[in-house]
Amino acid sequence: MPQEGALLNSAVKYFRKVSSTGHSSEAFEELKKFHQDHSHSLDLGPAFYVILDYNDFSYKFVSKSFTEILGYEIQVLLNGGVPFYNSVISQNEVQPLISLWKVITDYLKGLPISVVRKSLFSVDFHFKHKNGNYLHMLQQTVLLKTSSEGRFQFELIKITDISHWQKQSPMCGIISTPDPKDSLICFPTEDIQIKGWYFPKQN
Image (cartoon, rainbow, N blue to C red):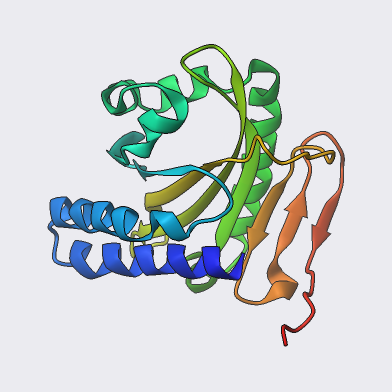
């Protein structure tokens, strides 16, 4: 995860640098360049990026690997937006995902916005390929931009095909913060929340 987090942070810096000028199209071009330059370094599995605009819940950017991984044309997601995205999530996981996002968003509301802006939140679920098969996906999200009041405006979302992982544990949500004691692991079907964890120091 350290490498993964560093790469996502680099993407955020790219976006914030150019979007601060008010030229969002330049920001999206920077993200495209970032994806082309760094996608080979992301070793969790095949992945694609999207940018979600919270102002109208539309997708402003979808990387070309979306088609390579899931079979759909990019325009399908750009035109279909969040309703299309939700329609191809495994139906028995929709409600658990809603529960997870509620826990995540409620928890984030309790953190200083300066911490939220540096946090990474993740969930896993199954997404339907165009051919009808379901792939196990890991969604990792970082905030690209918030309003001065802390309202979410843009998110960078990286979605990785982790179908090759033999996962036995249940679906879970993870909030990774700069300080491990503020981090959280939660599960949608159990009343379990683990706050704060510590990783051994790397040699």
